[in-house]
Length: 106
Image 1 (cartoon, rainbow, N blue to C red):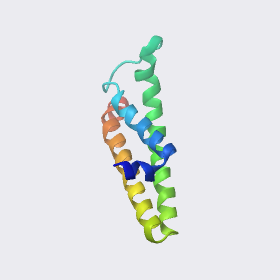
Image 2 (cartoon, helix red, strand yellow):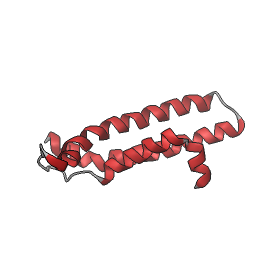
Image 3 (cartoon, rainbow, N blue to C red):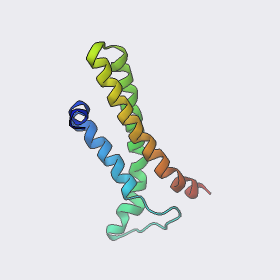
Image 4 (cartoon, rainbow, N blue to C red):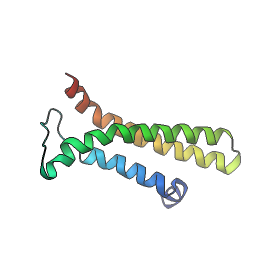
């Protein structure tokens, strides 16, 4: 685990932690928005940030795949582990938020 955190580097770790934080702070599907106070964060801010962070995770996965294709040896394996970690985080965000956005659209 420590080796994986070293391989991920600080910015990628922050990206993954922010994405997982949106999963933790996710409101219930169909919850009404709150327009004042701290209720704004889980009902308005977090639903806006979730798709943005998902897209950043997918962009990072794409860039990591490109870097992996241009490297060899240990770097090739490292980029593969990093890409897989980012993809797992992206899939978790997608699966967690999908019911919310489906309820929003219907």
